Amino acid sequence: MTGGGSRPEVRAAGAVLWRPAAGGPEVAVVHRPRYDDWSLPKGKLDPGETAPVAAAREVAEETGFRAVLGRYLWRVEYDVADARKTVDYFAARSGGGRFTPNEEVDELRWLPADRADAALTHAGDVAVLRAFRALPAELTTLLLVRHAKAGKREEWTGDDDLRPLSDAGLRQAAALRVLVRPFEPDRVFAAPRLRCVQTVRGVAEDLGVEIRHEPLLGEEGYWKDPVLGVARLLAIVADGGTPVVCSQGGVIPDVVATLAERDGVALPAAKPGTAGKPVASKKGSVWLLSFRQTPEGPRLVDASYFPSPLPSPVPARP
Image 1 (cartoon, one colour):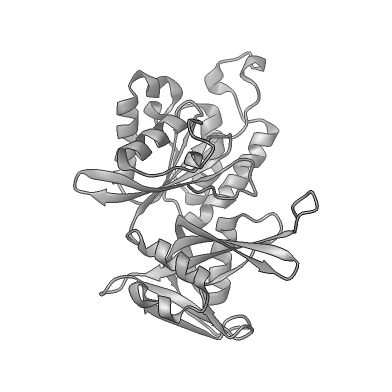
Image 2 (cartoon, rainbow, N blue to C red; image 1 turned 60 degrees about the vertical axis):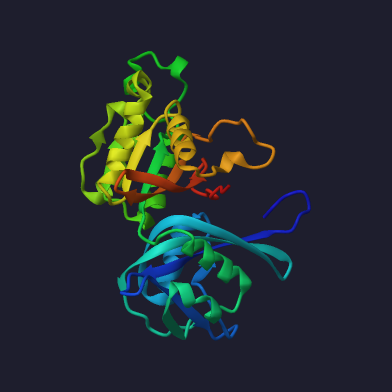
């Protein structure tokens, strides 16, 4: 609930669930008998739940299909009773499943993405679908994480590379572990600092993979040659999949700003009234960076930011 006498906010999340087809991607639209409308799958966040987790859960509950999240698409806002409802939508590739009519949804249709507008009842859903169609469905998404809280540097007497996460940082890391699951990452990288490794250790354990150390994405290695550091990140993207990379506050803003400027992508910090402010990168935060693979190499096409503290980040958009 918002303070100062303002109206309470109801948060929800959903997705454009898509699957590849011969004529281009198809998207799932659902019929809700309670409202007698056709919409994109969505639902309210559970207490303490993040938008990505809620989006994947609601898609699974309403459609029977596993949602593999990709880029953040759009926020729809509207009034319900005495509250303001906000719905955050993601692109989500179908990971397989089968629809069974249920209490909330009695029919599902797979429709060509370029012709599904006419089936949707609400203008907000049409706007979300158009945001989805603005870029190719097949993109490579990288989750760029700043390490969680590790206490103050001046209060640590040992080797700074070995400064561990604080209790608050361990809680952030645990929340991050849950946050990234709906994106189904497949590889984990970290700058060679204990706090970076600890931040994504749970993610690696879930995947059953080793964390690969990336000296060029730590502050010391990156600033020796930033061009080489950005090139290393792009090489990770070029390998495809959905990598998670944990780095530091002295690196992430420069990497994101460099790629955004190179490829003409607007960043959340570029809103009216925030000109000249640095790219956000709070501890425990996540940049969701989506790339188009081209013959010349990966090109950034979309970026959104999930600020700290977890576990209740709201994605920031341009």
